Image (cartoon, rainbow, N blue to C red; front, side):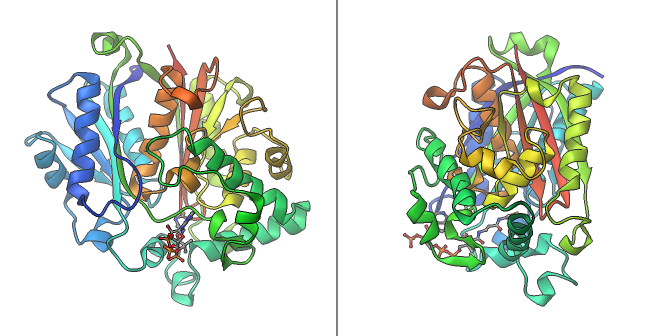
Length: 382
Ligand SMILES: CC(C)(COP(=O)(O)OP(=O)(O)OC[C@H]1O[C@@H](n2cnc3c(N)ncnc32)[C@H](O)[C@@H]1OP(=O)(O)O)[C@@H](O)C(=O)NCCC(=O)NCCS
């Protein structure tokens, strides 16, 4: 297997983007990535999207996107793994480059979520239709059950849980692409509208339009394109139960641990080596459970540790320097690719005011549904 590097990235702003269609968004990100890498022609591409059919009535993204990014003729593939579609696209591109089949491969993702009246229902197609969505529970309700059990089991307070979005919004202020780049207070969280008890609006990632794309190539060719390539050192993927009731423990996300263990093994690294991590904080409780599954904190302790400042600059590990899904936004198909872009910015010294100092290794964790699928990447500064 060949070593693989990232040589260029591009993304749109995240938000309510009424002036751009799904093709505009992906083409913008893809062309920016190609310009950044200085490549005019790619060998192949992968586009992650969770549900372009339901959100925009547009499928067949391989053909559409090849055309609109000026690459007609190249092979392309639409990758779907719910909210982990973007991370899965990056993993697919990695495999293609690592195998030696292609040299210059674009990986990205897109979602245009504001075009339908109730995006929450479309998202629920990634849950178990027969047992969950059909009975009226959507993702805020599923994660609310996880939060309730975690709070009971470990004594996490509502105020401590609120520190996750407070931290992520604080980080987002320095991210020009973020959907909600503003700080929020404890009062803002505790007084925001109740969505699914105990989760309030400020615990939830929003509905977002956006796209993100990266260019991958063999590590031994990377310096042809950039002085600052970033190596993809480890990749891990796993599936878990699609239905929440099939999890053995509602305070665990086993697929995250499986994916992380595989990525650590491939990279030859451990949690102590990682300086920052972009995690899938679709709801505030998710960040806490994921931080434990990735090995950064003991089970039952991450919520309190984050509330005490261990998840930000100067703490044990910087979690979500980009602002995370909560504040940067969560265009589901694009999120996993955008997380890897943040890691690329951090490890190539291009993260500006949100730069994590002296970072050698960073991690990204992208998850589908309530832990039904997970992709972890470990990246290395060169
Ligand atoms: C939480 C949720 C139900 C709120 O939807 P909603 O009740 O329809 O809220 P609205 O879209 O009407 O937004 C109300 C206001 O709050 C703002 N807002 C909405 N969500 C927000 C968020 N998460 N953070 C900050 N502000 C938010 C909106 O911009 C809007 O402001 P405005 O009135 O000034 O325009 C919806 O965002 C949601 O389903 N989020 C979860 C997404 C999800 O499940 N992702 C996949 C997870 S795996």
